[in-house]
Length: 360
Image (tube, rainbow, N blue to C red):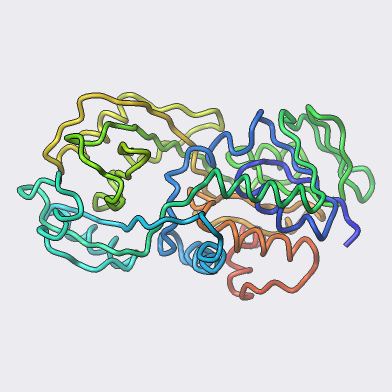
């Protein structure tokens, strides 16, 4: 296909698409920051749990499994443990059913995480079908493959203006001016701003902040083999990370697109929810950060050409599931842009299409 495609956004969505599309089009990727994956993609909890998310997201995640299991060094075993009080039964059973977790005893849960408080934990469920993702290796692998296929990846290239010139798009950026047949809007929290800049009706994406704290391993224990731990109702979670634990309040606070940072009070509240389930208090933080998880109005990502604006392609609204869906999502996007029959089912294509937000 002799076609110029300009991808705006160098997170996992944009970089994986550049790799998938590189052999089928002349691809340029523009990233506003100095490095790829600076915002949400660089601040992910980095877990592949394919049964987490809306039905369409789950289907994309499951369709990505073959890639992950065959890619050397990308996944490592983690497992997923959910805990709750007896009073959390409704949320606990809904969550464990949704993620296909098996009930286990509190004693078995303590064998996984010995610092759990047996006087508080009344409910527990576990599954092995969750893996850590080496996100840096994945992003750099996609970027390397994209460049090998001829794609150009430019950083420090914020987009400043977009206009039509006949059938082509003209895009001004910090790296110069570009012409393209197709613009791919993979700008994360900024996707509606990019759409408005191009004269395309925004869909109504909402960025939400999620905060993280890294704390020392409790009691000096080796936590490397602990599973990821969720509180019922996703009220908090904890995950081993480089010999320490990362703990999140799992909050969703509506934000304007920006370079997010953690809120001290929100972190304190989340750490208190975590502490209520364990016997070792949190005495200090090693680091903290935050990222923006961006959702469409129905909380399912948007992949496809805009219904009213030819040549404008949406790849947006990953909502924290960008890494675990990227193999299938980028393949679908590349097929649609190249005009080739996707291997994804027509029903899933429709569930992801931006056309679902068109006024009747």
